[in-house]
Image 1 (cartoon, rainbow, N blue to C red):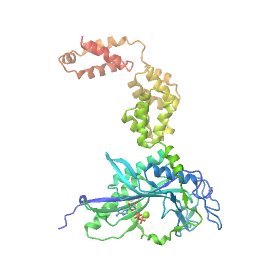
Image 2: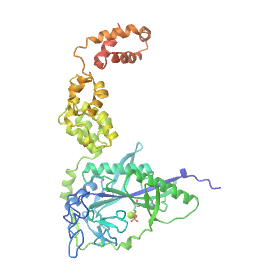
Image 3: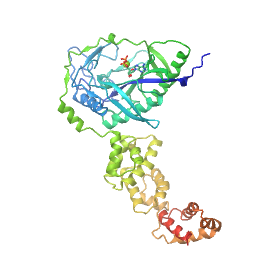
Image 4: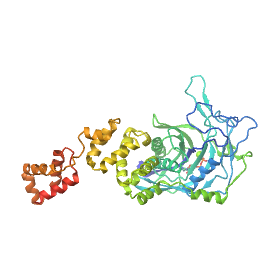
Length: 484
Ligand code: ADP
Ligand code: MG
């Protein structure tokens, strides 16, 4: 009897990640590189490959690729070269794609990220530069296919990893980290839904403990982290079913359908030599001066891990808040912008992490389109600092009210809701006396050593004070009276 189980196997994944770079112009022409414009508006004769037109390398393309190379500690090739990859497809006007085959911009390096509480390191095979193809749409008309060449010539880098990923979740977390990295580097918006980042997932399985790789399949053009995770999980099961039945399969190119959650064959994989790669005679090799690379190294933007360090050391934030604020670069930027005006960094961080970020998450809006303006948020923090409103009351009652009633002056709103602390906290004594008188049993127990009951008394007192008590002051008073 066959007694092998899927848990005796592990999945092995290597990724090819395509990243569209946010340069102003295209990779080899001066057309605008911009997503979302009307179809076929950014298409010069070069993009359309009219006879006699010549490509010209784009310095910003090279520079952004180099930032990624430096960030991943990849070895930069002092001389790199563009090659032609020849194939026919209607979205490819030249009949070849300009890419890098023999001498990519850099080789080796690694990506280190966190997955399921562990630090994971994935080696990179290389990163190369290339251009995107146009976009064909087959579902806009039932008679013809539509072609939009705006995307043709968009500068790309392709990052090829070694087969170091070992679970669907790791694939997801790797892509999440890549998204974060390119945003911190400022080289791409990383929006997978808009196609700014896509990946091909190469998937094989093998018995746990084995050191040789199994035959792989390649799932093309996955455009979300979630789909990548689903596709790899599906492929793991599919290959396991075949292997456990003794079915031998050969390398295949697959498509993942998010609606059905299933991978299906695309076409059998072309051999690399079918592309007839050769150096593009229109583009001379690119020589990088060491001083130029050095200048780039010195002007590198901060990476996510460095940002955490920056927030803890320069702003004195705790590690938790620093990590939460660097989850997305936009969060960290938001904090830094407000920190120019509000110097109680800890309080500012607390309000952003505990109040704003959950709101951003729930609403699905970006932090920049947040419902609260900078001014209003600063005013809110000011009210807490001035002790006009108790922090707990501000967080629990005033904050949600402020979101709902964005046109009412904040101080007025706090007054209307009766949240302003009375200047005179003399009424606290009476409240406390009442509570102690009404709960003789609890008082007895407290005095016999059940100190936890302090929470009970605080709760009663806060309720009785209807939010107007300063909790710190209240507690001091309470402890005094309890120990009398
Ligand atoms: P190709 O040029 O055919 O796409 P490469 O050898 O360049 O093939 O590999 C492409 C990707 O496939 C790399 O990310 C690599 O890590 C991955 N890969 C190679 N072998 C395997 C395997 N057996 N299982 C999973 N991934 C693999
Ligand atoms: Mg490939």
